Amino acid sequence: MTVIWGVEADGVPPFEDPLDVHWFVKAVTARRDEIARDLSRGKLQPILDVDERDGEVLWEYWVDGFSDAIALRPEAWDAAAADTEWAGPWHRLLALIAIARGESDLDSVEVNAFQDRAVAELTDTVQHLSRARVGEAKATAVVTAKTGRNDPCPCGSGKKHKHCCA
Image (cartoon, rainbow, N blue to C red; front, side, top):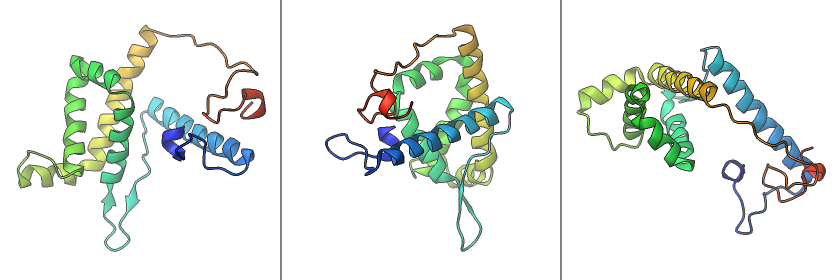
């Protein structure tokens, strides 16, 4: 969670009230669950900014955030990229990231064509990657231990679970 809320140098969340931490964690968790539900139904609905001046969808911010998420676990994404089922969607996603950052090797005609279909492309690509990931997860289900009341809270606050998000 520290990546989402940002932290001071000491690693403490920037909240004055512990109830704010609890509310924030619940809000982020609810959004994560909503995304997972949408993906499982095949109806991903990313929240995208819209330029108020001309109504253009600013998909680049979403792609940049997704790129930041990839950077949190690069080894997992490297392994996925080597999988033949992931190769096509993965390369389309990398192309969108490069275009969003102005680092694409494509010519301007190809970039414009990609940009014209960017929202549909990113939605389809993430949906495809999710289906492949879910297929892998079913094949290798992992059981994790439940967080105990006296264990550190998984939200990253540093407090015991029973005094934070329990």
